[in-house]
Amino acid sequence: MPDADLLTAALGHAARGWHVFPLRPDDKRPAFPDHTAENCTGHDPRCHAAGRHLGWEPRATTDPQRIRRAWSTRPYGIGIACGPSGLVVVDLDVPKNAADTPPPEWAGACDGLDVFATLAHRHGTPTDPYGGFGPHTPPRAGIEVTYTVTTASGGSHLYYQHPTGGPQLRNTTGDRGGLGWKVDTRAHGGYVVAAGSTAAGHPYSVALDCDPAPLPAWIADQLAPAPRPAAARSVALVSVDRHGRYVAAAIRRQVAHLTAAPDGQRNHALFTSAVALGQLAAGGALTHDDVTAVLEPAALTIGLRPAEIARTIASGLRTGARNPRSIAGTGKAAA
Image (cartoon, rainbow, N blue to C red; front, top):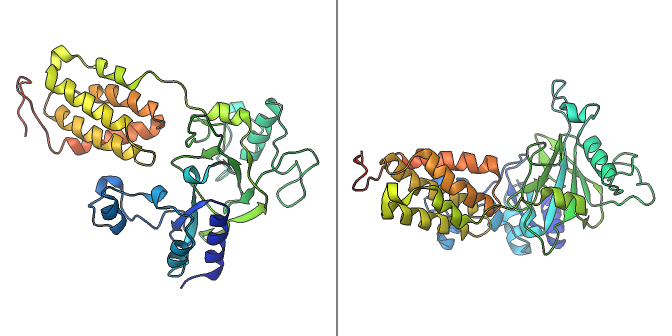
């Protein structure tokens, strides 16, 4: 049955300019689409209308009519697409169990809030979201606050404005390219569960209701993607003499396809390029290392994260191997 409170919450988030989309009831996962880009048949009405796979990010909306139609049918949870909403959300998590302890760098920290407060202090900025008193008490005078949600696990989501005029910030996870232990971020390509939703029966609720503050400069600096070499240079990583002009042209096409992909379609573009070159690898014209050497630098230049790139290339190579393509002179025939 539909839930009037969820509809009201979804409309409220959209009124702030935040792009919302349905999550499965009492769950964190998107309700739509019900398939991945790799498995898209084009039969989904929105994918069919767009002529391409349409994930949750481009489906997110601020249109009250679309929101009413969706949330009047089922008690969907509410997802907020951070990129279209102009948000960077800092996710301060809590340990999952007694064995979930901080690495030596963060010895003594109890959770993501401790790590974040330590980082803010190191950078000389008063960015303690709760002013040192906790989520249900007023912040200390002079402490910058921002829109804050208490999560189902007891952690916090801090909403900030994405910087204008700089590079697109994307998702990070803990110490792996992020800010630190139990501190994740969500921006372009990421979403958060919004206040008003539940997950496994536990609520997401507003702790501080105010406008998102500008993202502190020290956070933006740490999250900014590192400069990468021009994608076109990756073509030179594979010997044209060894593989011939056909392979070199195929590489250039796939690199161009990948680097031209619009935001929201970049991971899918990487997958399709990995499939195409993976077919050549299966036919003997390239090696898997060649494909990775070509596609990884191009994927980094468009903002994909290393772990995401590795997974997607591996998936594309597996798919491409099912339909090998051989070319004259490689000494191998297609299976």
